[in-house]
Structure formats: structure tokens, C-alpha cells
Image (cartoon, rainbow, N blue to C red):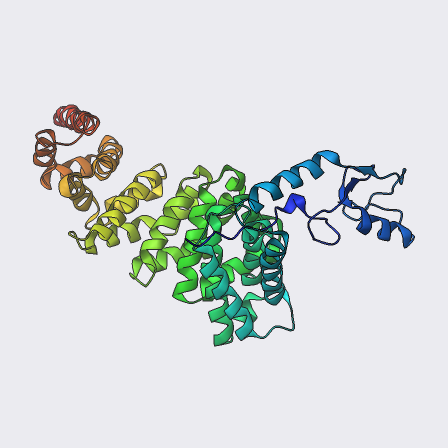
Length: 404
């Protein structure tokens, strides 16, 4: 059986030589270096710490025995599995070369694409312990490369292919990387602008990848401010709505991204005003009803409409759409095996029927009472049945009030 590749942990490397510590020593700043490397630094007349650049008020170097013992123990454990120091250095050097090839201005576009393909191939073995792809922060570096000079990148087919490959490569590394890295979009205005340019002018593959990044951003509390920033971008929201409305390549990923942006209350007004509800209803009307993939999209679309109904203009969009109420009524029992879809549809009807008489009348004309009775007799969850009873009770009381 092939042994998994193991790289040198980043904490076991000298920040100057980038090699495994042989004799780790610590400066007054708390930073640790290999003795030979730091002595060479100091002998050149430097009086600062190489990492922090703090002025050294004391040039004494103290042996870091704790780190030395940890390295010795690590080497013993891994050498007992057939690895030796030369192996670790060879594996690690190959990753350093790979990173250099991607970052170097002298590397050709073909060489960079080839390097990305190697990273994608290596990422298939993730996670493995002390992986240099993660330790050397390939994710941040690749994402920065993808976001460089967006306007120029999209003017040449070869560059488009590089950006496509880089974004896919980043997605492969994303589950094993720090999601806080994505905040570079918030911290650097040029990167945020390039993100929007790529979304507006990029290929469908680029747009689909960026949708996945938006979903990832929504999953982390670290990047909530970034999610708000993205959700307030009319350019981004308009492009997502356009993809959904016209069922272009990537429209299902766009629904997920729109749902992610809608999860933050501050974004809902902007999203609703850009006709998101109309686009989602159009998607529900035209989506194939028997494909599993479409069922997932239907559920996501329904839940996003429910989320947006806190905005008055979103309610009006449902009422004004010729299929708005009727499609929501169909969703109550259309995906009867999916409680989430039924509950979202009923929540939408509760919101609308409570506020608008014409919504109540249309829902009844479209057969909501029959749908609810069928739902109560089905094998759905008790929670879903309780929601059906709640809607029935609301309709009965509102109808009684309307007749007075």
C-alpha cells in the first residue's frame, strides 16, 4: 500500500532557511530560528528580528529545548514508518517549487496551468497530515492569482482558462483552508472589484465557481461582513437574477448563491428590489418536476422566496406574478416527500394570506384546502402537519372575517 505523503510541519521550519530546525533558538521577541541562520543574520550587522522586524533590545539567543524535543519525537514516529529526513525535504521542496512556478512572473501561462493541474491532482488525497498544500497556504496564493487584473485576464482566452482552473483549484482546497482568508475581498477594494468583474464578464464556469465561494462565505461567521458587502452589490445580485431568469448555465448555483446572500437580513431589501422573487417564481414554473436535481433547486428557490417575503416589494412581486400564488400552492404538496419545501410554501402562504384578501381568495381557488387535507393524511412529519393545521385555521378565521 502506498504511503501518504507527509510534509514538514510549518512550525518545525526555520523562518529564514525554511528547512527543518537542526538547533532551534529563540530571540527576545519570542521568535524561533535555526542557530546557524540567525547567527548569520546577526553577523551581517542586522539588529532586528527577521520575522517581526522589531528592534532587538537583547541579542541573547536561548536554546528552544521544547521544540527540539517535539521535532525529535516527530522524526522518531515518522521514521519508524519508513520515512527519513531526505524524504521529507524532497516532498516539501517539490511543493515549494510548485508554489514558485505559480507565483513567478517568468513562468509561462502554460506552466502555470500545468502547476494548477498538479495541485488539483494532489488535492484529491486531502486531508493528509501536515499537507504542504495547506501549510504553505496555496489556497490564499491561488485565490489572489485568480483575482489579479480581472479586466486584462478576460481579454485573452488563455487567461480565462487559467482563472477557471485557479478558481476550481481553490474550491478543492477550500474545505481544508481557513475561511477567514476570503476576507481578503473585504480588506482589499481592488480584489472585491475584480471579483465583481469576473462575475459580470467571466465565463459560465467562472460564474459557477464564484457562486460556490459565495456559499462558502455564508457558512462562516468570520466573513459575515463580507457577505453583507456582496449582498449590497447590485451588479452581483443583477447577474445572479439574470442567470436564474434566463436559465443560463450556472442558474442552479446562482439560486444557492442568492439564498446564501439572502440569509443576512441587511441584504434582503436590495435582493428583493432586483426582481429576485420574480426570477425564482419563473424558475419554479419551468423546472422539471421529476428530476432529483430539480427538486433540490425547487426547495432552495422556495426557501429563498420565504426569506425575502419580509420585504413589502417581494410580497407585491408574488401577488403581481400571474403564477405567483398558484405555484406556491402547488409546492405545498408537489414535493410531499420533502417537508422543507412544504413548510416553506405554507410559511409563504401564511405571510401573504394574513395580509392580502386577494391572496386568500386565489389560494382557495387554486385548491389549497385540498392540498392541506392531503398533506394531513400523508406520511409527512408532525411539524409539517402542524403547519398545515395552522394555515387551515388562518384561512378559516380570515374567511369568516371577510364575510362579515
